Image (cartoon, rainbow, N blue to C red; front, top):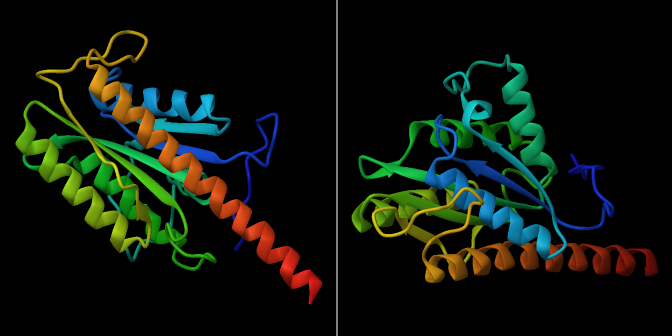
Length: 210
């Protein structure tokens, strides 16, 4: 199944970056960090979509259950369209939250796509917690999940210690260093998506030439 591009943009050729994250609480640090990254992605010419908060309150993933509700269909459809992904999770008890893990489990519905799962896509990762230990463990867990889904975690993953960095009402971090890291993460996801698209176009032209 070929991934369809969204049509709510000036150019369907631009990368579509999907943000998944946050908590059930509106305005959480992980949600604001994710919004900040997506704003930078748009500044680089990408289209963006965001799924956060109540949109991720989904039925517990059951492998043998074939029925999917409207919210799950929306998530899987967004994952299928995306050419790049950013995941932001709070650190709960040394790992990512159950909300985010459950949402990522539904990527199993992409197993029969071509390419399957997150293959050929960059995935930027953000972990937010009150302390460095939880942020590091959460980033490591997120990387393991993305590897299992055949995605490419970006070289930079961002750890946000919320005891030292806060986000304002405009989603701007108080730390210039975190701001810079989130900009780099956005650029890595967008550039990878652009390079992948360029490679696919070149491959298509080469195939036609033969």
